[in-house]
Length: 444
Image (tube, rainbow, N blue to C red; front, side, top):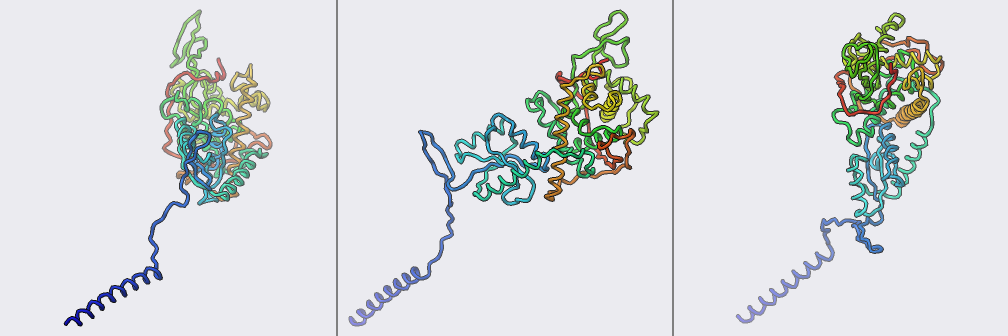
């Protein structure tokens, strides 16, 4: 009996030892990985000259500060951001993203790799409406080199001033970048940024596209230099339909329908002569333009214009359809070109100062805007075509019949015909706002 108990204890001990040996063998020779992922590059807290910083080691910290649907918008925004005082000296680049190097362009800002400095700085750019938002990205040296090279190529491409006129572009390549230019100019107007204006002032995509088509049709109808016509719109009101020159008044022989009479003296009246629409034509200038139209309609076929652009007889300039102000602006420009024998600077200066006293400073500024518009629009169209970058889908369009220019074009400036289209549902309003510095045009 005692011997049996002794052997039972030995067997139990051997079983325990064998189990331990097997367990150790399984642990030693059949390891299992624990699924625990630790960050490969944790932020480091540094202290340098008494200043605390949080840096990301062995990486380049970048901020994506602009993601726009079109090349023209991206380039225009990049140039505009570069001109802001708080961004000067910073390293800004325009290139495709790391995941889509050949995709649409984005604006990047290289940071200082210190989150305690970079995050407040980026937040200040957002609060000051310099950038809409930002996204932090970690780049390698190869990513940075690729973006630098692409950004340099884009800057070089857009620095080239095309020799061809805007009208050499087919409509499908012209309308999109031109719409982008119109939107950018209205969105970056100082009055908009300072919130001096209220209401739906900045052009939306549909309005900009319709306005671009209107400008193209009117420029071709009157055989106008398209880039200078664009430059006039930029100088006058950045393509925004806002009343201006509210304090301007003129003396005339008698009051007409809708006139606001301020004084009466010796058979004459002093009436308000504020400006209307994106072209900032004064009430009296619109009346003068209507008198030109009443004669011009007998020598020019206005049925070629779309219904929205055909002038209608009015008694009060405030009742005019906003779209037809573009037609009247084109007719005034055409009249001035004829008066000055095709001298564009003189005609542009007279658009602001009047035929008797053309404004050379205004003409120079319009010329700069015209050259810049042509450079951006044509280069962005060429860049998109060469890099196969698609644009946003355009709204459904209803093509018009080809529209020949009703005035013989100057050599090399205008096309022989145009095929254009319209968009529907675009709403425009003229609303009174604070006084704006604007031209008086033909102050009669």
